[in-house]
View 1 (spheres, rainbow, N blue to C red):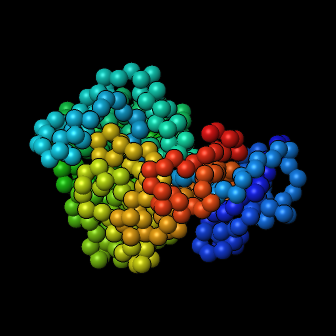
View 2 (cartoon, helix red, strand yellow; view 1 turned 90 degrees about the horizontal axis):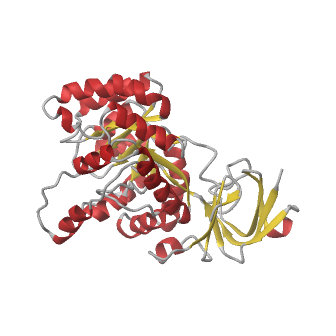
View 3 (cartoon, rainbow, N blue to C red; view 1 turned 180 degrees about the horizontal axis):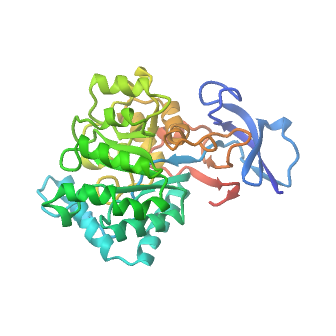
Length: 391
C-alpha cells in the first residue's frame, strides 16, 4: 500500500457538494490523499494526514480527470481534404465515413492499435482519464469485432457501433444489413463491448431500424446509447428515453417534447453534447442552456473522429460550451467530468471524493475557470490515472 498526498491545492473541484462549496464542492487551500488507486481523504491542507509521498500543487487548481464518454478512435486514414473543402466552401464528392471505412478495412491490427494509443495518449496529456470509444468504421463482422477487441485492450468503455451507417456492401439491401448487425455481427462483437449504439438519422437508420438494433443489443447484454438528433429533428431522443438508454448523444435539433423527455429521464438518460462536431462542420450549436434549465442531465464529450470532430481536447470542448452553448464555466466542467460519468453509469469516476478512483488533473492555473478563460492554452500540468501520475 502506497499513499501520496497532493497538498497546497489552491482550488479543488470535488464535484461533491458535501465536501465543499456549491455544486462543484469547491475546497480552497486543500489536500487530497491517494491510497493505491483510490482517493482516501479530501480536506483542508492543514489537516491532511501523513503519507509516503508528497506532491506540492503550488497553489494551482486540481480537478477530476475528464470523462470523455463519446469518441470514435479505432480508425485509419485521413480526411484533411474533406475538412479543407468544407471550410473553404467548396463542394467535395469523396465518401465521408465510407472513406474511413475503406482505410480502416485496409489497415493492419498493429496500425489500428498504434493510432488508437496515439490518440489516447494525446487525450491523457490534456487531462482525460476515462475514455469511451466505438467501432463503426469496419462494417463487416470481422472488422467490427477486431476494432472492439483492439479497443477493449485499452479501455473498459467499449461500444458496438456496427450501425454507424449502412455498409457500402449492403447499399441496395439496408434491411439485410440490419439483419447482420442484429445477428452474426452482434454475436461476434458483444463479448468485447459494454454498450450498443446506433446512428438514428436520415441517411443512416430510421426509428424502427434503430429500435430493432438497440433491442437486439440489449438482449445480448449490451446497454443502449444513441446518436440522436444531430443533423435534423427525428425519433432518436424519444427512442433513447423509451429504451432507457444511458445517453442520447448530439441533441442538436430538439423539439419541446424532446427536451421535456430528457428532463423527465434525467436520472436515466443523459444528454451528451459534442460541440467539436458543430465547430468542425459549422453547424447549429446544441442549446445546453435550454436543457439545463429544463432539468436534463448534460454531459460534454469530444466526439473525436476523423471526419466531423477531430479533436481529443476536453478543455477545448469546455471553452466551446461556455462561449457558444450558453453554459457557465462551472456547468461545463461538471458536464465534462461528473456528467460524463453519469453518461457511462459510473459512480467511481468524475469526482474527487473518498472511495472514488484517483483520476485527477492539475491545472497550471489558480481556478478551473481558466479552462474557458484561456482557450487553446495547454493548462494541464499533471495527470493521475488510477493513482499513478501518468503526465
